[in-house]
Length: 253
Image (cartoon, rainbow, N blue to C red; front, side, top):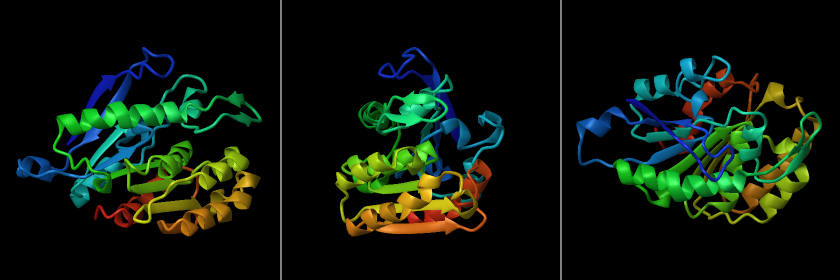
């Protein structure tokens, strides 16, 4: 069952902006009132579950997948900021320059701190979760994929499983490499990372930095799954097709 409500993130501007929060509870949640469940947190919540909420009319259709498979996992997601460049800022771990938009102020740390200090405790306090690190995962695509990679590097005490789909590592390759160099990745970390074969040419920097990302994560001992998706593109439809793969890698099915 999918639940929605509105909330604000005072730490991020505009502080009074109401965003929709989405929470999926598996069927087993009601069937067994004593059961507790792992939680998967996701970025771009409006694009995760159903087309009627999606920014461009097409979602990952995660709700269909969860209902069909009965995966025993709670999924929590927050709508991204729709105003101007705020989504890019909130989903960037560092300030960087965009050739068309100018300076993108990195507010990713503020977003992640809010998620782990306020949103996660809200979910754990209101629902029957398994709140421990080993039962907590995070996933996203594009800039949300970059944020999931950032979480793997610097929030490993909260999360142990990460899915980074088409992460926007091209926005600033130097800072991405620095982020990975400073990473603290525990050896039991499970990390899924993919890129669509047909999107690799979208940004020249992607092909240059991607092998280094793979090597850095592997050398730190992560349980790493890397995929170049045949015919994959940078779209919700393409990411939908990867759901069974990354959910299996994360241990949810």
